[in-house]
Image (cartoon, rainbow, N blue to C red; front, side, top):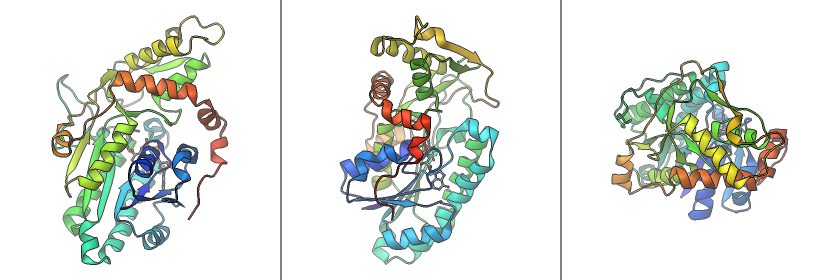
Length: 354
Ligand code: NAD
């Protein structure tokens, strides 16, 4: 197995690269532009392997992608590269349109050119796995409703609209060209190596420095949380054993209100980091309600029964075990996030650049 992972220096992509290098025999090519979200220091454990290769390439660059395909000769593509932060998409949607839509189109075309010239057996075995989000489905109204693979698309933010567009492109390439694609839509991820602008790491790090813990609106928005290593495992199962043309929803059965997530983190820190910053009696007193995000979806929740039934995947972590591991990881890895906060992570380079 020779796997191109796009966005392999990001939060989920790095978990996929670590999984492939540590738990399979695959050769792995990480194709990443290294935007602010790309951090090669998240790949320290994989970078020493002779099976890990790194290409600093923008997925909008067709010529560079042709070179990667010709040189690396992949059997699988796992496409995770994206602009992924909803707030950034509201402030500046252009990069989301560029990478998530044009980039996916450019990658699909490069992969299709390569695939079209493969010998028949290799063409039959080739897979293109597009990694997407449950945010393409928009809001859930009823409290018992769940997102199914057949739920109509209704994206709310520039981010989710750009991901929905990329999903449509992938389906069209399957239908029109017979290009062997698979698609997954996953709920919110959390865990080690999460960039500090996202809710869970932001709250942990702000609490440790005695800063306010911002909660949008009334904090009643519900998300279905999945531990990132469970997601990485699910993605590898789909890429290698999934049925061509199928979509699989991936979720953790862990619906939590945002306020509850912040409170759980505060309570874990009381236990795991009892030496609080000066002037702080209880971490919970740092919780601060701020003006809601425009277009904020109220509830997401995934029905993951198809991947469980067809591929036998189930998450290993509950929210309670995963959030405890995550808080402990941030306490144990101050170097990693310290270098992110100071910007030093963008100066370092790990592994061979091909
Ligand atoms: P991330 O922002 O942490 O990482 C994105 C990576 O893509 C970075 O390494 C970045 O350098 C790279 N990248 C960005 N633009 C690129 C370009 N033009 N060319 C090459 N590389 C580029 O994102 P993430 O949270 O790891 O998400 C990965 C994928 O999973 C995304 O497609 C996202 O939509 C999807 N997803 C994320 C979540 C979540 O909770 N984070 C949930 C479901 C699905």
